[in-house]
Image (cartoon, rainbow, N blue to C red; front, side, top):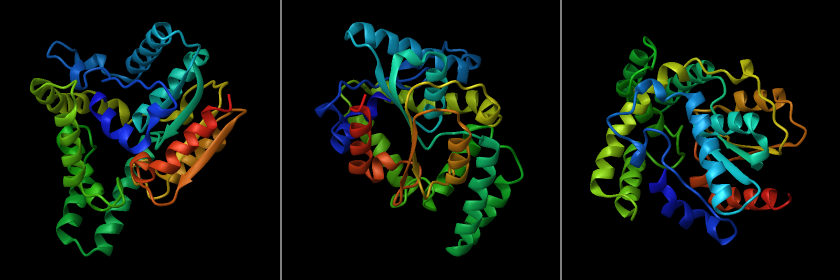
Length: 276
């Protein structure tokens, strides 16, 4: 999202070497309004939105192609976009990609249960047992699970849920492109988007999707990621038929290696992207 631009630049210094674009995807941040139909928030539409944004940027700045970096579900959308129109991109970087969400959902709760037992958190263990009884298809259940796994180190190794939430709010407050009404819109949009996309997300399985990639693909994986587990990433890396692909592990990171190991993260992108 646009509100992340300042903090990302402070950590990664993208702009020293690249022309960088951020945008609020459909129904997120400044892109949200009350007239958006929930059914328009789907993976196919977000893939087309991404292609439309990139085409406009390449035309505006007179560039042949773009380096594309996607995070989590954004990585999934990036992969699908590159499969659909690969000529727009020179390199594809996939960070903690959602691949087989049904399997990942099971892993998340197994991770949470194990960590809660290790840390002797009976109250948290009870919440996890409740979450195991029902599909995570609403924003309330999604946020409840997110809070648990973040506090157990599965999202960020060294930050808890409240710290992550504070960072998100701080980024919005310091973003010159966000007004106070934009902040309120963003908070409302989070629930709206989660409720719209979760039923489809839970059925996502890239092993069953037709993906045709002819550009270099780089998987970037936190070894302590509870959301997008390394085992699934490795399996898909071996499954994906791409001539030029790499897998880089981040030993001290969970789901957000760009925040936890920014120097290594950026050097990888800089070195790989400038080869082509």
